[in-house]
Image 1 (tube, helix red, strand yellow):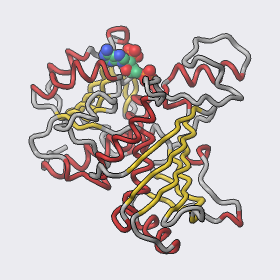
Image 2 (tube, protein in one colour; image 1 turned 60 degrees about the vertical axis):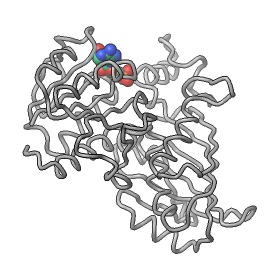
Image 3 (tube, rainbow, N blue to C red; image 1 turned 135 degrees about the vertical axis):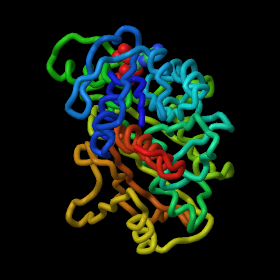
Length: 331
Ligand code: A2P
């Protein structure tokens, strides 16, 4: 089996290589691709060094899968070219997510959205993935009516330049800025770009992607995204109103039974999810589970996950693993 990784030199690309190794793909034909700037450089995979190739070279090798984490422009340009040679693309950018013909998939929730003929599959936004994984079992039982979301997003979600900015500021060194302000000892109420209505693109993604994955356009959703100086993962405070009332013990049970979810909710022992401890983990952690007494049928949750893992690399590779199973591809 041949796997191309487009964006192999990037921050998510590095985690993709790690997750591919952990999941037993180190003996596949591996084709790392990046921009022309990186062609000829080497990246490590499965204990070996591989030469980075151009995207055109990767397409010419007609891989079975191409996993993309190289930004929207590269996805728009190259994903259809891979699809045309029969490759299945799993794309981590936002380029294809809102296209009604492209499945947007969290495998535990809606793997069946992928048809046999589909050659481009969108991996959702990191903040969306961790939130819908926790909300799906509750939505199936009680039906979501409205969500009010506040995120506390890690600098790793912005890429390598942002991580470098945080550590350079901390060390008092000059650096290239990924953000318009200092990020160390600060919080920026700003993720993505501002739209004319005052919302940011990251906030709008949470609204549209959640509805698409849960298959319900009636859920009312509003979000505020903030960037915080953490590196281990994204945290989210989610206020969820349902059509029907719930029992808190049953909520905890539904969350505990959902694959990929770990409930960490023993407040009397100070046990709750935190990004530092979610780092390098594939699961989504849920805690601070409590009733909102100000509104009927409403729940408050605190949801944390490593945005580079379940929020990006792990989810994309889980999609590929499910497709290998479904399509009977031999490794
Ligand atoms: P390169 O390292 O050659 O710039 P990050 O999110 O950490 O900034 O990483 C982005 C990744 O996407 C890098 O691997 C980068 O390659 C790659 N990339 C960016 N633009 C393109 C492009 N037009 N074609 C292929 N790869 C690209």
